[in-house]
Image (cartoon, rainbow, N blue to C red; front, side, top):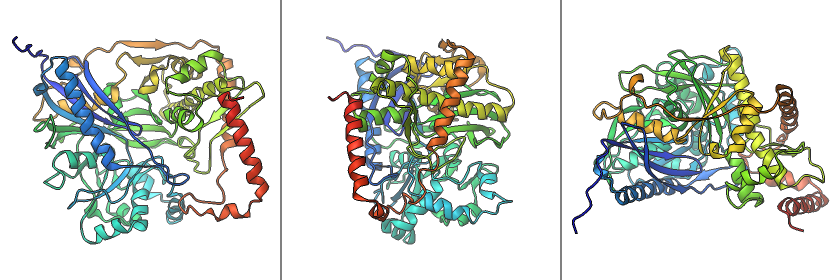
Length: 553
């Protein structure tokens, strides 16, 4: 029997989407933007101490190879010829910091994840060295001094990890965010791998001047970072190198964007004033501000949106960053055990249709925008004997929406023109209750594309449009029309405002919890001064509460 003829679909483009919770590889038709196939692998997160969040860089790299191979197998089963894949784009969790040995290819420590809080005392010490009338860090980078960004994580590694110190002294160390680690590894690693990053990822390190688009000598000296370990900075759309192994060996890697910039491109927010909100591990609202840097007066970040070609202009964005969105669902699943899968949250919330006055502030890593308050910690308040796990599930979904409302309000005040609707994407947007709640709490329509994989789509668009690839046109007339689902507000404005003002009250209660110990020190001595009765009563309350929430008699 003759072999089945391979389907001819025109040029295809692949995208690696390496997020905090999972890695995926997706393949798109460059002419229609249709998603043809994908594969996903969940990534472990390690919590070695309170406030510390790490991942294994080798596991992340292996997950990329696995996703590429499995997706190629699926394409084969669909009778699609993988030789039509003409380019690969990379989108990644931003800020997460890796240092590795360029001679062995081995990571010198786990990746320190963007959510990690161990550097709080480093931040406090550095902030004392910034003149009150000249915040040169913020004016050059657009970022507040925070545990969130790469520079302080790298400083911690240099101060605390002997392997890193020795590798730097012996000129063996390379630093990068996840995109750099992946591109270096995929393009050959110790055998000629390309050590680079793009402007969007560089702009999240706190070492990059967003005006000159270069690593900044003054910033590197301030943080004590040797410039020779930094990757070269490239545009978001150009050929960086070729895949050196696997089913796609020889295919150029030609697109690179931090995940939130990739989603902005994938949502086709190319005009000044267009905005999108991505619901992933965290929640990120970005508004394109065009060729000008707009500095926020209301707690938002100024960041590089994209630069789609070596000779193309740079675009900037205002960003509202929320640390915990989808991560709160994972916490309910893994830590409290009140759901077995992330999808169950919608079912529980639907059973009650209200939080019954219960409010959940998931400040597990402090509060990001618009507060930038590292002393905050998570709280659940407004509990009564009537409260059950369904109400807590509903409150968790509401928390994501209230946090979005806070950063949208800040965005509207900075931009002066309120958004008339909110474009959304990300894994959580498949939850219809969440989307309806979001429309109700914002009191504007929420618009969701029928194909929610906009982060991967943005990386694919950048890769396919690169000079030397040229299979994806970014001209407005050539961009595919997107079908959308629209959620209109269904409650009155007064009710929306009452719920929001109660949430703000709960947020105030969450602030100021951490006052005596920095997670960086990991010093357990604080607990020595607490009476034994404190531990017994606390343990009993936690045990009874957990059993009650889980429905255990």
